Length: 459
Ligand SMILES: [Zn+2]
Image (cartoon, rainbow, N blue to C red):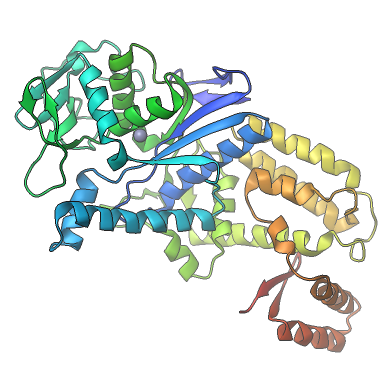
């Protein structure tokens, strides 16, 4: 496999630390609100990475954090639950949005079933121990800070101006112009959740800075260095830069060997951001009657390292492609509908090409082009289902488009759909209409697309 490594800015052959095993850490959501579709793009990229690693027979150890304490979660919990005590308000808010996050993720085909999900508030002690292990830190009245002047490695991910004289920054997030000593720990300020912390003989009761959680939880569950660290490009600085600096300072070793970053999703050509209020959530997509998996397909059509410009038109095109795949998955396997058997032998070749494309720095666009070619061939020639029974589940394992899960209609219903399709082909509209009514009685609705009939349940 090959990956573009942000550390070296090169496409590299992937060599895991232990043969046959991969340790992977992906930065998870900050659960203070609905995540936007730009965030979801990153999670789809990471899901695809896990799928192709597994397909290449790697045993995968994946950890993702949930940021359930930081500037944003505290602020929002105050606004939303002004009458609760701070700790209760925080957990009420973050549990709510964590649930919504995993619901959204499931709808767009993200598989976390083998992932270890870890929460920041459950690892405060690990963070405190790590902070104590960092030599180049200092205490100030409002927190414990990482001193970047004493760190010659600071800036490995991004070129930085190193003229620096202890400018400090207390925000969890800041932009590239603010190269500064950053907070490892923040002393309790006002009415916020806090934990006891005695360090260097001082009482620093308070809460962690954002960056320290990933350093603490990744070393705990994956060791250091681990193989792959991922996130969106917006995490390169300051978040990943700071994670690397803290972890190297504490243990004298690199944090991870490969960093993979997915690009921004733009809306109408502009970067989405909560502050600009030009962002969409998955709700906005489903409200317009789009299939959540159409969004997944749209994301997969672009390479993860290219910016993806989201428009409703591009989503509609992706949905048409999805419907075509679904129509094929529902019926084109049926020998009755296939004109001639014959596409069978190209199935193995196509699958091999798809795996090859995804193994080459996740070239999902090329993989989907191959799939589209396979469907075209199947549409013309039919597919011998007996030989290809694992095709749909193989494709689902790679793309997560739930094509095989659709076959949970009874043989009886499938039979009616096939007979109706044959009646339509023979221009026997009356018969086709009768069969449609039979399907309606079974709560099955048929949508005729240019690529064939697609069924859905009406209850
Ligand atoms: Zn992180």
